[in-house]
Length: 250
Ligand code: ADP
Image (cartoon, rainbow, N blue to C red; front, side, top):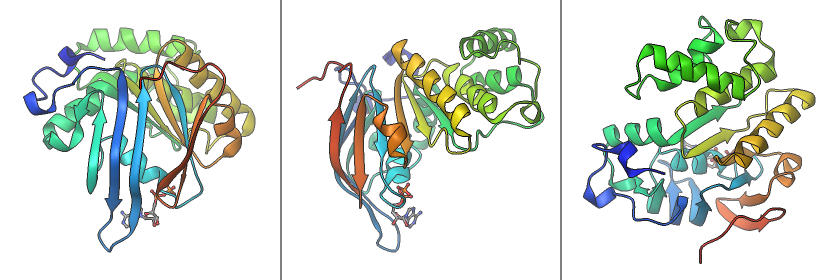
């Protein structure tokens, strides 16, 4: 996490305050227009280097939580901090900068540009970073190689399998070296074999240091991850860790 990377995008009141938390939610509530209370009193802290499943049934509040962590929406009550920044204190322009520099998104439906090949789709992930075209393409190539797609650079999405498309989407999310990767049902549109490959990649990327949150309704996927935050009716009902437990600050 680097304050310098968001230089000019945050002012003093929203600057990082140290500590290694990538996500910190304090007493967060979200009530939609019409009165639906989608989240209530959510406290959650995710440290750098963690791999977390946010799991719950449909309607439990997962997407709402993802939108708040991804700074795509704001909390009604409480405080959301991402990469050390107080999201509620940032203007829209500064939130865009925070997203572009610190958060990578992966969605169930890939969201790749159909007319562009894998290399350009990934290079486009750097469009807002002030990186030259040549450098964007070089970094895109290296990232595609990292996700095992060095042999698919010139393929368009229609020429790729579902699993390959998701790996391109993961490369696009990663190419800017975000502090946090948010994956929303990343295997939801894949068959089980392709889903396993994608989740293996997620674990591999986390082992190499990327902090990752996977949003899923699928207990099997959640149970294979080292930390599971269970959401139900807008509240966190359990938060369990197994396996290699990352350091947790008091
Ligand atoms: P999940 O992702 O777990 O399916 P959501 O976060 O989408 O859950 O939804 C939580 C609750 O908030 C549900 O009752 C849902 O109907 C409601 N909700 C979600 N988005 C909106 C919205 N934009 N306006 C009103 N209610 C919403």
